Image (cartoon, rainbow, N blue to C red; front, top):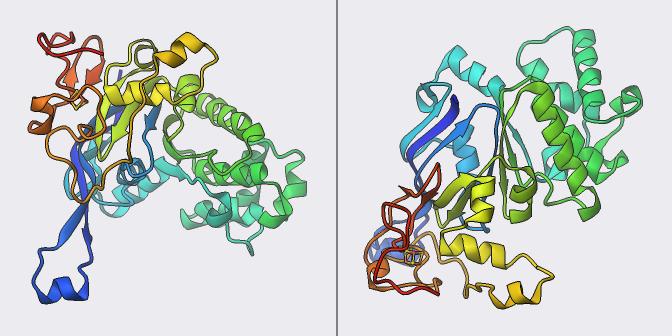
Length: 339
Ligand code: SF4
């Protein structure tokens, strides 16, 4: 299995602007630790789903994967190369190979640009000057994403098509350069529930047809259940659990993962009674809690959790978890209470 994208201890901290008073009294500048030490490997050809609630740092992580942001520290390796070090042609090739599907098609599309031109813009930017060659490639891509007949839609403006069709345009534009790696950040969050499954299915069909590797970023654990090969769960800037989809859903280990599953409605009253409810909001990424970041919300918290940050450790076949409840062998640590 070849890794297409690897993150090695990646951090992204953003400075917080000091207020006038803070500047006067010399208060030390604060940092938002949006991504704080993430290591992961995405395997060529897979659908990797990154799940986290708002404020977990998942969107920042997606932008680091595409070099929209450069890391504060750590490395992002794409096909064996550190993307921070890319320049000139190497950088241009990377920009062709790795693309983003944005969550909000209204914001992503210029209302005054016809959709055929919008889809063809990356071709123009990457040197396809012949307008009839561009048009042919755009029409072919439009057919692939479900515009039929594509010619009828080519000259329409974004406001003349539906929300689902606009998201198909965004997908077509991301795929027109035939990338190998695509990050889709909440690709269906802005769409009607009735068409979400169609758009996700389209992405997966295109993945198969075009040999893509997909990183889907979502707050919705159900998307991981139906579409992932592997899943990572992110909490407050860190990956707390990662495994194959089957492993995560059959054997969730981290208390936060269990709580995420508990928040999905289930018809079985017995299962409802066993649900693990977490209290409170995700804390600020400016001053994350010391020790395990989940400790103020964790029903299993014990003394060690408040002082020692758990490492992401292997716990069984390809299953990684960052929690003091599990020892190196992947069992509950002895002497610690269970719920
Ligand atoms: Fe909960 Fe402690 Fe595990 Fe953190 S390390 S998830 S606080 S049990």
